[in-house]
Image 1: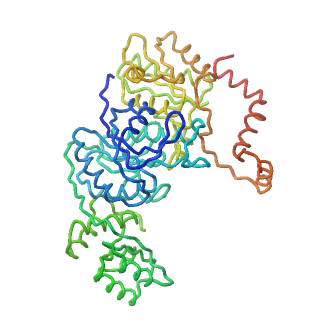
Image 2 (image 1 turned 90 degrees about the vertical axis):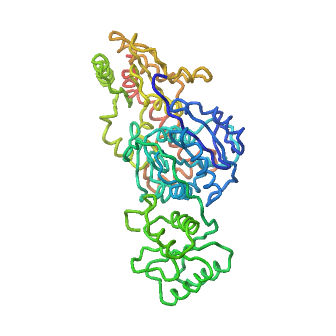
Length: 323
Length: 200
């Protein structure tokens, strides 16, 4: 080619359903299957030099700290050789992974683009199909082309590709959410709102975290019930969502007592709520609240230091709109 | 019919003139011609926060690729992934750059991707030939464009009655009616379509 194509690392995270050119849906579960699948979508190589890699984790739609750590290490290891990264993962896991990578991989000067690999819907979901491609299947292939193209851009960002938009990973609410923060879009071509990065610096990894953190939304009907259940479980921490106006004195006392047994973080939009034996988190997405609490507990052990991390913006994760 | 025309920025006056000629010729045939700088406003607005991109909504892509540009690789990849017809034109004698050179060593290039050399005399013929071939190219005539239509309760009752105990979905039933009963029998549309594709 008369122009230099960039080098992109395409990482399949875990058991990912992907469609081959023959129209058959396959679950890619080991590196050998990845190569065969990659051969069936050769158009990706028109956009960039693409190297496909596979991380063998079990199918998961939720938080997977071990996967996040593995991805972060892989990115650091491949950083100088690659111009960008594309991660393909099940839809349900993308928001948490984006939040985690935003915190774990710091001083990023290259793009990390996450793409959800949805199960093809309809009656054949989960089973191999013999019918030719549907329009939805074409969309999956087009998403990968767009993700690779985004990953060739000179931006330092963890981002999620959803439809024709690229959203900031640290403030990604979920697919289709209007509050997602846009960093790029596909128009008749791709435009980004980020300033181009100029220097390449190997990113700093901060991958220590406490993996067993649960999220619970307090029920106004019986707010103490959830607390009792989670303090009895063997967890590293709990993030409690507080519906508006329900932090009563009795509840505060219960939270303080619970926080003596297990780290508790209150996730709230109420400005009046202050740390009091329990931590307070605000202005982040729910996914980021859980992930950042996991991460902060892994970085620091003293209460004040953890709370300071929760109040410090690490990766543009503070949402501009009022939550 | 909507066609997206991509002409990279160039310092060559000859290529600049050819780019203008391509757009003008397509517009003259009645095709809605979209470029990066001047897409149809409604397509740009509707593309925000959508599953579809403006590229999804065009019927074909035309690239003037005499000056190599990375975006050409992206458009080719997108066209192949989406089975979208694409005409790749290069000025005769200007370049030997073939963006598909590596690709076609190991893979079959879909017939929907048409690569031709042109000069000032043949530019119109090249474009008209491409438009005329759109019927026969390997394209994906698949329901890929989202179209939201609110229907009345009585229409819903009819569709429910008509498709119950069949293997046809309501959406497929409506698409079949449109294709077989309305479009196929619309002589005025067929005449316009043939004219646009240079068959008249």
